[in-house]
Image (tube, rainbow, N blue to C red; front, side, top):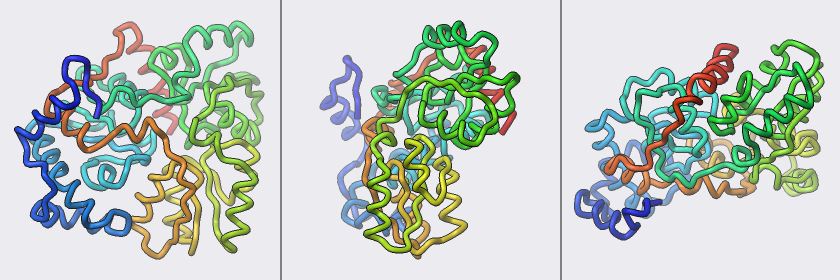
Length: 349
């Protein structure tokens, strides 16, 4: 849990304890037994007794404050299954943000996701449980960098990953996610397309697109860690295993995989094929979330953790709802051009 300079962590925890019964509780665990049934495969009962009081308090506050929780696929199971109202990948959450009726959105993901929700809902309150939850891709590029690439490649449209700041979205022609990047790139006019900021995603798209793609060389701190040697070792150690990888991985890793897709694409692939054993080459919490619903599938976990995603906690969610702090704002001048780039993406699917 992150507290701002005016609310030290200990003071905030004391305030939460004074307002909610947050001690580990078997009674709270029993009251949330239906939720626990979803995650019993990956969360021990003793840990659930610790999570349950927070879940009950969050559920109560959501109703009182007309709030909805959007949870990315990389959230830990107690968040993803315990308090998330809508879950999914970046595209799904962006679409969901345009449809929710609640006045307050709590974004359980990283900061650019919360900015996207604010861009699409400027009149609503958007909270993030920890404003330090950043992204290596979003921090790798600026609007000035976009301008330089436009000057280097006159006339080429800029397709920017949603993993970018509002300023970069505003400087782009259209956004994309890993699930629709190829479709978005192929839809652009001209022979050359600029892709930012994920160089690996751009290279993987270029293998399938007829467009000439020039790209910014950013990378995800999780996915850039995987190597083809590691993938081959999984196969050697686990005969018959299926390997599915996120397209933010290096191209030589994708070449070793049985399937590559967005986080939601990976989840749907496992749901459809139900392999006996699988490794999901991405952030490791996603395996826990899928394992919770597919007991017949054995998940081999390459536990590579996103430190930013892991800043989001039940305690932080409760504090955000209780205090209304950690509100995400976007400059007025950026709202319209950034929204235009995101809405163009959504319109293309």
